[in-house]
Image (tube, one colour):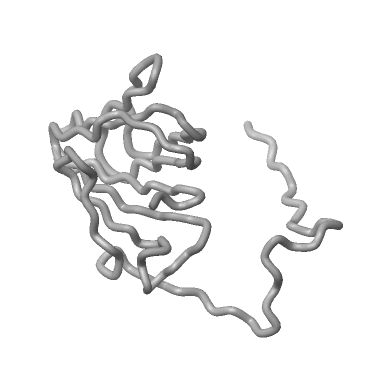
Length: 140
């Protein structure tokens, strides 16, 4: 059985990097339909920038959340970039390619990709592979 650790909060002796505003801030609640659709070069999948600097409905400055939809047999070719990224597999299954190996991924998997980690993904299933991609800072 896992041992639960107590969250210690965000209090620190250093001043905050982002100053606390004088007035309370409200959230921005958006749907995928309110995002900015994009395609990746050479890929037959589609993506939506839901929380991202280019989306006026949720213009995050240091975070990108993208819903990525990859149909069966489609591939996002391996590449790398300087941002940290996490792939959260929401639906379907596939195979991810890294610099030194390949690994099957499925619904429920979280794949952390450090900066410059070579990565690509192929849908090896029979349904659309749905991936939530979290990037910090957001990709351009």
